[in-house]
Image 1 (cartoon, helix red, strand yellow):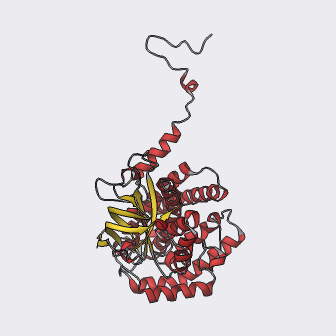
Image 2 (cartoon, rainbow, N blue to C red):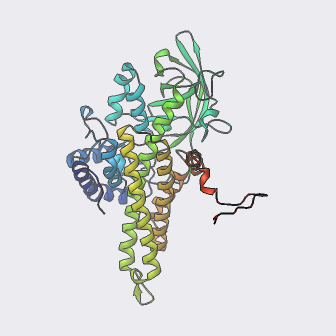
Image 3 (spheres, rainbow, N blue to C red):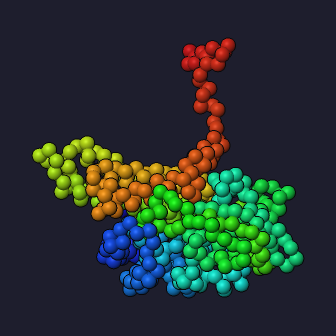
Length: 413
């Protein structure tokens, strides 16, 4: 299907799709259900990505990337997302590296950028971003944050408990959100800190076992404690108290980025299902001849097309600086549900091969379910969408109905 992607974006997306097919997928099949790709093998993939001219689609050109706008990245991220390793291989950083890059560029100090930005862009270091805490700390409601940072002379002292810190156990840097003013408005008392993971008092308690942690390319998710962690004043990112707004901006970008790569995953799942149905015979005919299956996959294609259009619309607004908060919520909610549905249909189409590991579908399936929870669960986004929906009500639309004790005589003669 044709979309209004720029000529340059389409060209890079075509090369990315070729790179993923020719280089990344063979590695994916070789690793199968290994949890992590070895660093040296990832470095080789990234070198190949440079040869194909697809390395760093969203990274500024001065740092060696392609410098595509977010809108231009859409077809490229879809193409990269066809493999779980694709985004890592082209170094299209998602959460948390993408969020860390955004934070450093948007409100990091010159000192913080000089120390962290270039090695992060080059893939020499890894970052974690941590807001989520165990019950009853911050989760889908970040204002419940319990981790604190108190000023002590020319230092900040951090105490707290985080978990589900993506890439935390492998990170060199953690972008940490902590409460710095317990008396302030819930949205104004949170600040952001850049904390080296080797700072005394920072302890990775464990990497949390979870549904898709066997999937190739899936990062670890860690539980981390902060016990009397002393960092200099310069660790503060941006202004004190602006952390909530910063977190939402970074998270919105991540929500869309993830949705776009998941679309690529769902698109490949549909391609696998079509190929399998065209070959597999059952009850004297190929699966592809069965009307119920054809209609099922037609429904999947229709839903996928609609959510791809939604992704292009929201990234256009984000690139243009237009209001987009509700659009992001709609895209995150819809893309997570549609891609899960498409992958589920593909698994069902392929039967036993759908749940086996010769095909990528079982990895896709376990990975995609989590997308409806992290970066805001379905209900959080539906709440925001509904709030905006009911903001503007035209009561005249129901003027014609009768009210108790006041018979309606419409239409009048």
